[in-house]
Image (cartoon, rainbow, N blue to C red):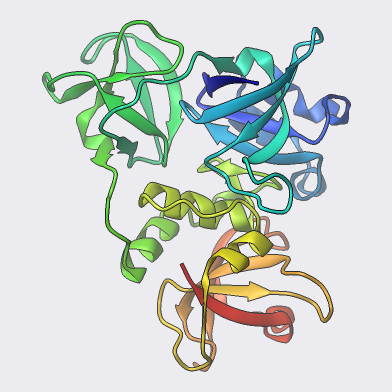
Length: 297
């Protein structure tokens, strides 16, 4: 096993190399275009595919196998998945989307929905489409509103707009802070396995929000439920997590509490497959019927 990092703004992982579809071409190119990939899919394709998750620029990767067909089987330690592999979320990624391990150091996080990395302050764009929640390491002092950062796959630092960066928090976030980040993704497309501002699924939204706030939550909803603390009915508060499950089945959906379950009506913010986007709404009847509990990260 070798260590690597994600070398593109957003990399997509599939369950197997042969499970990609014609509409997945833009995401599986050597230089992926996630926006074009999402636009190429029908709503049905967006809500059901063999995509398992995505990874962001600089994210740590453990490579189990490299294949001559241009695919690698990998694990993502920053996306815990106790049931699939305790070392990290497993999947197959294009080998071209990997690069050498990133530089360690003080951690900054992208706080814009999307930004660009340039060759020099205000200079030519080198890496477009770097999304919210991407973690970078500073490489020196700011210059004219731009900050040099170490970027996986680039020998020399690149420059990011200083206003698009924030120091990664070291304390647990408040519910207000979590909801504020989540609301910035309202209207984002629902994409099964998605983990970026361009498109997310329900657990991807929760994982991404807390990642932006310096907290590592598991990737999937049932694992998120197992890793968080159950809250007694009536003690829910803004920023907690509603989990949903059918009788006798494991958790299959998650949303962020806007108003508690006892309120009339309860409200949640979630990536809703039926609406094909991230929405904030009164809890629909189908969610009320399958509400399995509320947890606090």
